[in-house]
Image 1 (cartoon, rainbow, N blue to C red):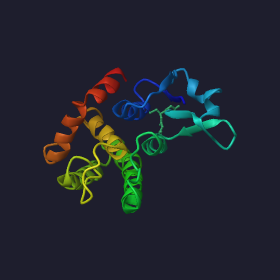
Image 2 (image 1 turned 90 degrees about the vertical axis):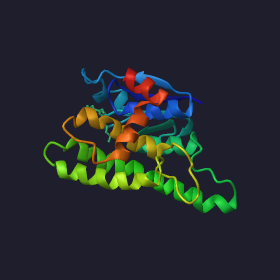
Image 3 (image 1 turned 30 degrees about the vertical axis):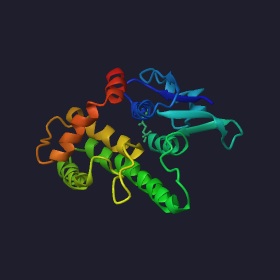
Length: 208
Ligand SMILES: N[C@@H](CCC(=O)N[C@@H](CS)C(=O)NCC(=O)O)C(=O)O
């Protein structure tokens, strides 16, 4: 089985790499030259026709073309890895089936929140600061339950794809939104510090 991650320096492929490293999942990488537009041409466009990284090939499964499974969109890749390699939604038996289904649904929710709500709010911070501030206020409240987004009455399943997706964007905040005062969001601030202190985060993002 080989997982091949297609990425580029300083791209969203780092988020996927961080997950793979954190979970100790073996993978190979192919780095594309985005500046020279390598992502917009074959052979890469046979993997992602939209010409964006990250993309993943898993030769353990087949896709609709009968060849190794090809996936694009960082969120879809994270969810796939969490399910098939991270063991995040495995059920411990019939009594755990519903909780496992709920963990999967909530992981999808947080990944979409990161990519479709939080990320865009962060990128639009200069023109619409109030949107990001509102999301951060609410997220700070959610984090009162604990640092891991899926922690709850069923216990704490630990760091997972939901945390990876949200924390990756949070850790970009000081860089992308340097003018943003984080002091009204103490739990967010603490989580950013905890994220950047994780050895695998530092290894991947330091090399990104
Ligand atoms: N929603 C996509 C966004 C992918 C994306 O915008 N990737 C950028 C790098 S971070 C890219 O490949 N840009 C090159 C281009 O658009 O030509 C995801 O999360 O995977």
